[in-house]
Image (spheres, rainbow over the protein chains, first blue to last red):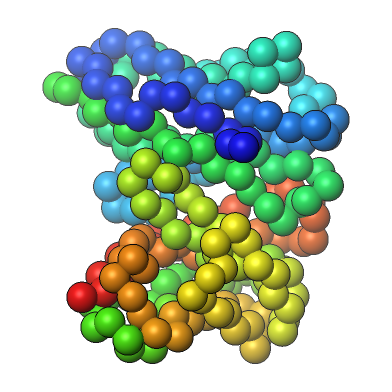
Length: 115
Length: 114
């Protein structure tokens, strides 16, 4: 069974629009960690955020914000006022405390920001 | 900054060849990982290692082996390359053991098997 689901395969938005990337996860552990990574065309995955399961506070970093809701097992990522440089593939990932060395990645969402 | 370096960005090999993909990290990380990335399938774990000479199978180890003789280097080996191993290969590392720390990735190797 897929532990991390990113239902949106591709999204296109016009520059300056807001966009939300969805991530739904599945785990039985009470302690776990959620991540978002960005993969620009250069190929290297860049770390964006790490949240643990006990911290449900939403986080904002510049134009980026994350909404963590345990009740719906979701960890969604919103880009406000999107820019062309935001065009990339975005991956959501889960790591469980019991298997700290294993990361479960979603299939990724390809975001294209049109100028 | 942590640097994870993969020896080749692009590689073209023939079916049946033995292929070595090399990965080096410079931050004394305990854990190292090999993933392959395919469209629509995301990242899938091939092998990982949490110590020198230690290795663990991931989700798709068939057709691959690994070697970790030194802490900083983790090699992925395709014993006899096949066309279905054409893919993007990503190496990653993380500090400590079972700490759920973030992964640091290399730039990837796009392997084409003809």
